[in-house]
Length: 331
Image (cartoon, rainbow, N blue to C red; front, top):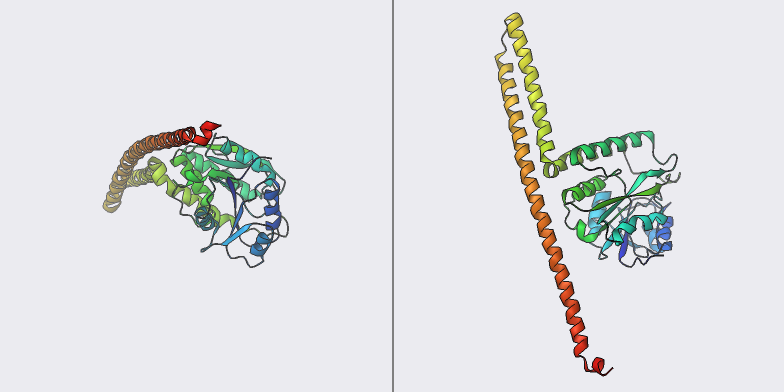
């Protein structure tokens, strides 16, 4: 069993009384003693059950999974965070697999891929289709294939998340985490995990259509700062196409029937010009983002080098101090 003293298990909950005790015990059995449960005001005894099983329990000041995670990150001192849900769909036994790339220094963020080993009935057909759509959109918009960006089983360094801008209050938090990893160049690993069926007596808090729409909107909105060429270019292409269609209609009516549509012609021209301007703005914004990203990488490299130098100087000072100690010299 690995030593997980530097790892805090973060479990956001809301009315998970049927499963939270099992979840806390499962992680503690793997050596993860530091379990933080952030509860959204459950009315079924979730908080007391989690506390009785040895977890540290905090009631969040707001509501929603995203707000719970954002608030929890300000309460955690451990350098590593393992995030999981409280509905027992994730196996605590997979914690070793999720944490290994993190603790070995191979990655700063690790995502557990639920589709690698999904039990029958663990996800409805509608949710599978929605996940494929969202993951495909993520690949298109943000240019990375992270396989399962909506997975709630992930691990990350607290220092890497401190660079993120997280604003989501609900289920869009996993989407924001994934986008911010790409945006800030955080090394991200994807590992296979087992995704289990939710216990029959436990009710889901997910609303597929509403939450799916929010996630897709979040993906598009975050493209503004991560992929502005797509964000502005998509609107620009739609505007140009709309203008060309109107221009075609106006031209057909004029040449075929001799009927003029001055207002539609004006709208068509404005639409085409607007679209071209948006495309140009997208190109310029993408250039600025690329330059800024490179500057941030250089700054991060300098910071890491300074921290390494400071650590080396501290070790050297400690060694010199022991060498000057008379008692050490007598020995």
